[in-house]
View 1 (cartoon, rainbow, N blue to C red):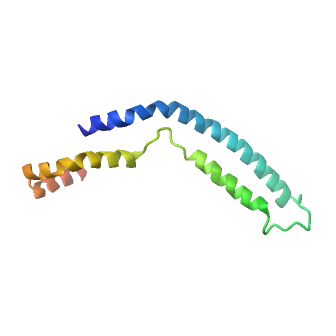
View 2 (tube, one colour):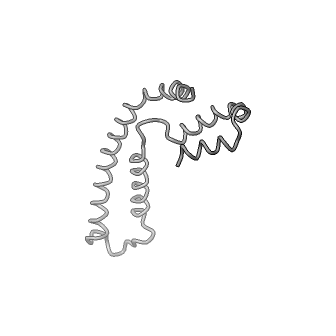
View 3 (cartoon, rainbow, N blue to C red):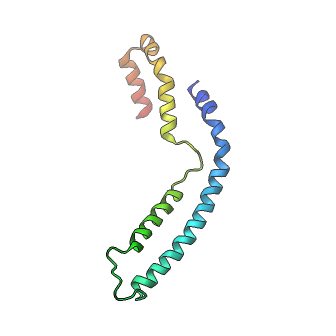
Length: 122
């Protein structure tokens, strides 16, 4: 019953899977290209002697921009193809089973229930 409830609640969200996957793929390509160009220019400027001698590295906005770009790329890289995760599934299952718990405890003693649970888990 819980599985069916989870299916009916979360299955409509799977409609967004193709668009999320496509958006991630496009984002990785775009941010990857931007990051590659920026890193190449950063390397040329700061490691290959392209910066003027009076421009200090410490306090330069180039470092912060590089870090911001890296964080943006990681956000795109971390996108999932489904708009929910294991945590959502577990939370919905627990919330669905919570009202049934007192009924189960009137039918099955707590010790026996724990034994069954431990045998299933281990």
